Image 1 (cartoon, rainbow, N blue to C red):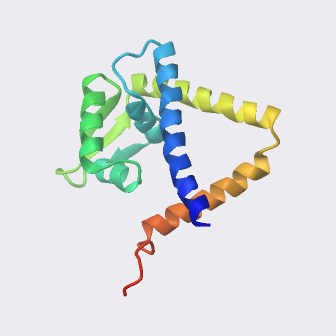
Image 2 (image 1 turned 45 degrees about the horizontal axis):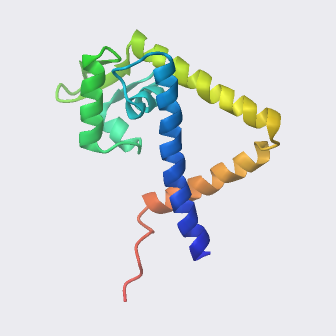
Length: 152
């Protein structure tokens, strides 16, 4: 089990990099030059919603300084609109602009195409459901603090 677990961790890391590579090709195909793949994924995860900056960090995908830098750059290039919270003037909210939603649509189309290819050429519906469940359990393990070594 230990070797399988170690292999899984490496696979997760490689898949993340490959996903960013695929997104890079897609944004290049649309001649989007001032957005990197991580920023495109942030836009995809924001979608049509509005988030407080803290929520994006809590969402689990980004480090505080990383998200702040990327949102700042996306605001500068017109992909994100940032406003002060009506409830807490110290907090900033972020939502995709029209330009940002266009990028979201490109990524959504890309992922939809991938899902269709998987469904057409592989009978993976059940496998993907089981894989998702296993990865959610792993996320839960890593998120809850139960990952610590027992005290000696």
